[in-house]
Structure formats: structure tokens, C-alpha cells
Image (cartoon, rainbow, N blue to C red):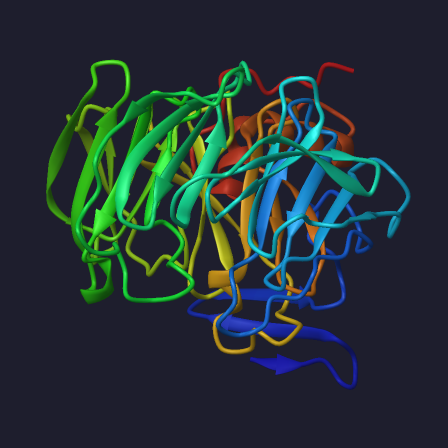
Length: 375
């Protein structure tokens, strides 16, 4: 490996392969420049949180200090709106009509963002929570407390329509709780949580609010998340189980790397983005178990110096086939992360239809059935 003279270009040689790198060039799969600044996340504070609007055009960010910023992804760089949060610790969310919202971590109260302030929609009750979300129709608010258990509250009258019991002690000894300790399915039917994660992995429990029952999933689980009608469970050996929410195992994907935080699903696709502990995002097809490629995140900034990737938020946008990442004190970055979006980029650069061998040479995997450029 060597630099070329005093330039920023780097040459690497491995076996018979010689590669030329330009460290100043922005990756072509990156769809926007710097400008959408992410609040800082100091050490020992909550990781960066991000929620994307239903139409994929706006993003709501919450930093480790509780700073809340609203961005228009297609607006002017740096033209974010700072929101005064009603509580120090909140989850970002969106109402079905496209109104940004905040959910209080303590008590799970709901607030609609109005201008630069908020309006209370549901008063909080109870203990601190590790994850919360609204159902797609906006009728119910689902929360998982720091003790586990699932609560479902109806917004119209604040009544509890489902309440599964948790444990006698908190799920984790750490504060803030590790990312991936609990998750809620997109439709709000299922919630999952892991007890004993502090010791490298623990017991996974899943609650089904429709059948009004809970199950335990065998094995030692490290993180849990949902991807449409699938549940994703990672393990200490760097494997990823794809399961039905009921717990039935569909397949195990051997990732082969340490994961910094849970994956994020791109709605409408079988693709997820998984942040590795080296600062790359791996795009995986969970239907086939194929690793499609990697995206290199920008270098760390801010005060989260030892583990920036654990504090980096990631979210999928189904309407555009993109992944969004937000690193502490860095920028919101939009990435092309599906075959459709990759083909559009390749067509733009080539100016013609692509050949199967070209796709295989660049990506390392088989091409989609149609490589024609529809212009």
C-alpha cells in the first residue's frame, strides 16, 4: 500500500490485483452532501435516534442530550428546525397524517410537534421504557418498559387494551439501555425483549397482543428487531436468525462480523442494513441470506470517540429504496441500498443498458433479471 506522491490517491496491491483509491471522492452510492447536521451524542448518553416520515421526505432526529431537530430531506442544507422537547428523554415518531411526534421515555406520553413546540396528546403513566411506537393507523401507542412486558394504550380514551407482565427486575443494569434490547413490530401486534443481555446475551420473550399470549424463544439472544412480517435475532456468535414473530425459525444467516447495533429494514423489500463495528453498513437480503454489498460510513466526529457506530442511527425508506444513517455530530446520509436504486445509478453513469457480466464484476453477485435502463 502506498500513496502516489503528495496526492490523496492510494494504491493497494493484493496478489495479482492492483487497486487505485481516491480518498477525497464521495462514494457514488451516497445520494447527498453534508448539510443535515446530527446533534451530538456524548459518552454514556442515549444513542442517536431517527424516525422517517411516512412519505420518506422528512426526518426527525433526537441526540444524546435530548436535542430534537426536524429536517426536510429535499430542502436546503442546514435548514433544520430545532424543536423544544417537553421531556429530556424522548423517542421520535410520526403520526399517520405526517405530523412529527415525540414519545416520552418515562411514562410513554405522546406529544405532537406544533411549530417549534409540542402539544400533549396522551399523558404518560408508569415506569421508564426502552422502546415505543404508534400503530400505523395512529389509534394505539405500544411501549415496552425497562422491566419488559408490553402495554397497548388507546389514544382516544387513554385506556389500556393490552398489558402483558414484565419481570421483577430491569432487563439491563446499564443506563442508557443498550440498543436492540427490545423491539415492536411495524403493525404493533408483537413486542419482543431480551433479559440478561448484559452478560453477552439473554432470554428472548415475544408478546402477541392479538392472541394475548407470550412465548420464549430458545437460545441466547443479543439483539432483536422486526422487518415486516419477520423477526431478526442476532446472537453472540455473529449469526442472525430470521424468524416468524411467533418464534418459528425460517433461516440462520452467518454474518461473520460483530454488529454494532440492530439492523434496519427497507419497507417493501427483503433488504436490511446492518451496521458493523468497523463503521460499514452491510446490505443483506434476508429472503436468500445473501450479503449484497457494503457502504462505508463517514468518519466519526463529536464526543462519542470510542464507539461511534453504536451511537449511529439507521433507518430504511421504502418509497425510495434508501437507507439513512445519522452519526453523532455528523450528517444525515442517504444511501442507495436496493438493486433498483443501484441500477438507476449505474444507468446514469453508463448512459446505456448494462450487461450481466458488468453487474457481476462490480457487485460480486448475480444481476436482477432486467438490466435495461428505462429512460
